[in-house]
Image 1 (cartoon, one colour):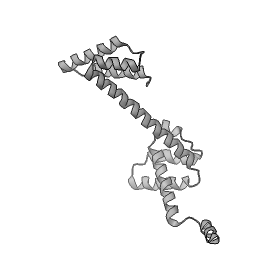
Image 2: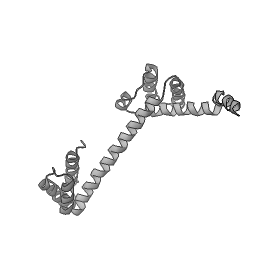
Image 3: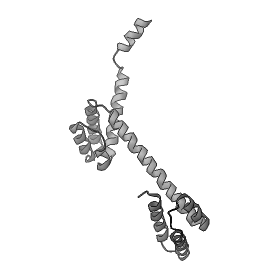
Image 4: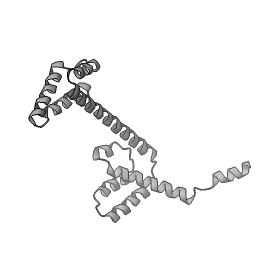
Length: 170
């Protein structure tokens, strides 16, 4: 049985396995094309030709031409190690999730402050002692006056900016 297992391990990958790998590389290329310039600059792409093809793909509007170009990108990516790029993309997505969670936390605090008033101000100051109680109370009161008068929520925006400053998420 050991001889049979050794023979099995020496077989080349199946046609289906190769196709799955090529499709995965092409999808990785599509993900790279969708990144912003700043995000793309953070990716460890050592092959200059791959980088050029990614930039070219951004300007192609025709569906079929874009599809062919992405297939070409997938073909070029066969010659590079995708692991560092995938790791960098995972780190980027992790950072985005963290940013989104922090943003939702700020929204939660703002809504709570506007809904509960002084009791929420006290709770916020327990978590962030460097906060300015007077400014927070002033912004909450100003928001209520604006809401009653039917004005745009300028105080709510100011409160959000202050919370972002206070929590260090600028």
